[in-house]
Length: 229
View 1 (cartoon, rainbow, N blue to C red):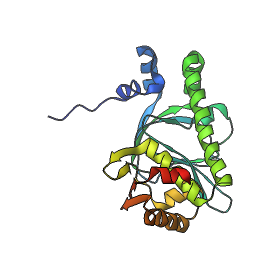
View 2 (view 1 turned 90 degrees about the horizontal axis):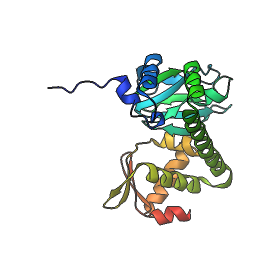
View 3 (view 1 turned 60 degrees about the horizontal axis):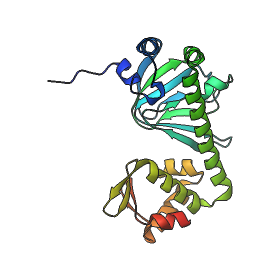
View 4 (view 1 turned 90 degrees about the vertical axis):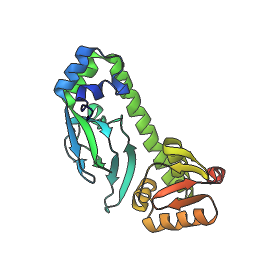
């Protein structure tokens, strides 16, 4: 017998962001929101689009990126299930300055910005949580931009691999296996480098015994060597 599909309200109750909200408030959130499924590689919003919605990711992954004037992409953040994004539209009345795009098939909850702002006004504790999330995301982006200025490509790649190990690493007989799959192009866009330079640096890391590769799966073998970089 097939398990009954879970309702949107069931998922909303399990978002950490909404812990402490009453049943009535959650039902109101359920009423004003909608669940959508978006295929891999589809944009959710583009630069200069009006910021009209806030998104909650149920499953899949989303990349938040910015395109330079010469057409180069720089990935600012990767959103994981259970996280909110598009929240900058709450504090910035202007159009979107970034692109939100699915890295894989994704299911997400869309909440109109005006209704979400009303909820924040009624729930100062929720407003505090969202403000804290905005601050943490900005700090993460600023740290990545500092890496671009002060570190060479091996240093930036080592920093990224260590961050991915913290967020997605699981113990492996050889070291730390990264559960996330990223293409060399995506890695390049995360650290502001060319795909060719990423390929060369990964090959050098592997030759020196820092990492090993299994297709798009990466195993960190010598974490301390990456930390030294």
